[in-house]
Image 1 (cartoon, one colour):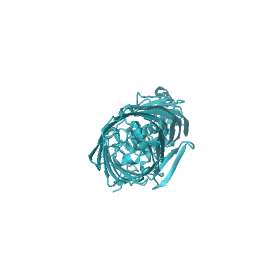
Image 2 (cartoon, one colour; image 1 turned 60 degrees about the horizontal axis):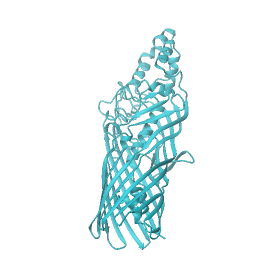
Image 3 (cartoon, helix red, strand yellow; image 1 turned 90 degrees about the vertical axis):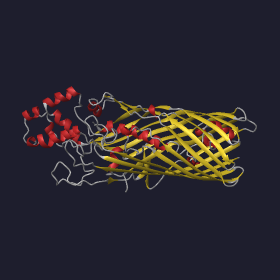
Image 4 (cartoon, one colour; image 1 turned 120 degrees about the vertical axis):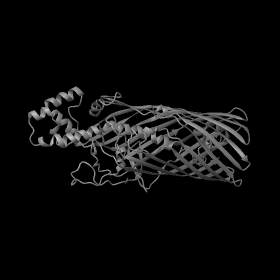
Length: 554
């Protein structure tokens, strides 16, 4: 079976933070080097050509003379999500959620009489955020993401020093869907990109056994998204009950007495609904220059054995950009109703509510973001003259994502309401606790030399999720994942190599109702980001990567 695929501003920003976290775990090292992909990324002790800039710059000393590498990577994202209502599904007594319920407006019951069962809707196409245009570009249904890379290295004759630079994408991913897709409440279009456009590197051969190296990466970082928003929460359910039950007798017969007693809530032209659409948000933040560095060591005591180690530094950034919100009518009418009553105005003043909610809001936003540090070490061992085994272990500091902080150039009406629910919110800032973990992972690769010219490769890398069980979400559905790779390398002559690779990453996850505070948890204190509160969620991600590499020496 196929699986799918208090306020708009606050939730959209939270979504953007979550998307970066999930994407980073999903896309790490998938678009850097295709030979590494087929070896389960277990190449610290056996880095491939100029891509050693990323995996272990010390191995650049293995390059002789002038060498160039050109690679093309195509990635196809098949992201699916499925939603279903458990037997006891309700939000403050209401269960007529149109996402999972067939009932139309002709059914007057507050509870659903005909549940749909499993609701599916795939992510429909890949998307990219284009820096110069500052907008999304949708690639069309079935079209893959492309990540071309290129590099050049030079080792002067007789020198122990090698110089290099490359352009590559440590992380690039994005998706989108058409209007009406049930998955759009956690991102209709999402893109996360880190593109290293310049990476000056140097490696030095200390002796016949030991090499050291370093590289400095100059990268572009962007996070962009637009999303529909809804808040199926008991507080919103209570407001619906007040509108439909308490206010019904006074809708056409209100007076000053009822306005005072009912705080003016009944004067709203449209009532609140926990299953209604609250608005739509566009957000994009970026940084043109985000520097980081890699340090590597390569030890080769014997021809059949080597040990490698690399440290990839973190990159702390201050991402800046713009946001735009289109607010739905219902929340605006609620504030308008409060302002129509003396007692409503007093309550709003005590709580610090805005005097009104505009139809749209725009402004500048900044986000503190850290691309996490990574450490990896591994060995290469030739079991037989024609059979080589690589094994690596690695650690990524996703615990640096303890929280994401957003700051705005003005006071936001959304935050004036949300600050009542959290100590992490002020009128013009938001700090979102994330609680991510720093997992260890491993990978293994096998390379068989069928002939002097032909090499066959296979790799496997199980990826432990950095996302805690109570933070799983559907933005990019991933928990634990498995990466498989197959490849073939062919040497045309002493100076020219061609590699062809295919990789497949698979992730499956179940998020039972009321288990994740970033997807489907119930409770009054989970208002801000639970668009599927009370629903069961299943996710599946299948990513297929094809790559071609051409390497030549001059």
